[in-house]
Length: 92
Image (cartoon, rainbow, N blue to C red; front, side):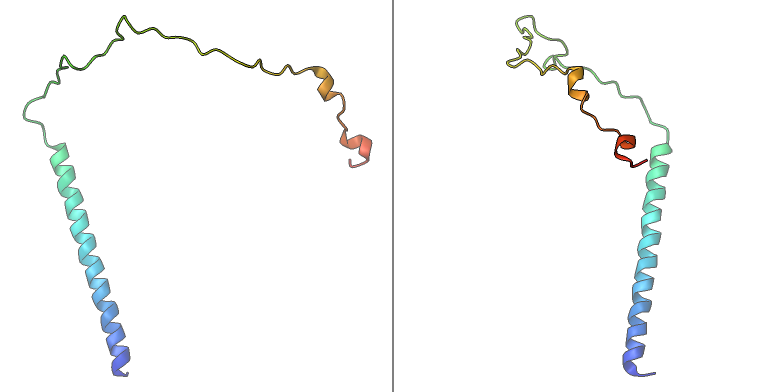
């Protein structure tokens, strides 16, 4: 084996070791986060609405409907009379 081949194999070994250690560290962090999330909370926190948050609509606001400018096109049955069926063309 030439020194270049040994250097390439050494590089791949180092990359594999680095990937394995990164994977182990990642899953340790995930396990720690799961453990912290499953731990019981000390005291429930109650959220209170402040006076600046408005949940209702003020009485001075009116909702106005959108006016239509153009009427929609009317579809009639006459538009479908010009269909050509496959049996008439001899395709079936």
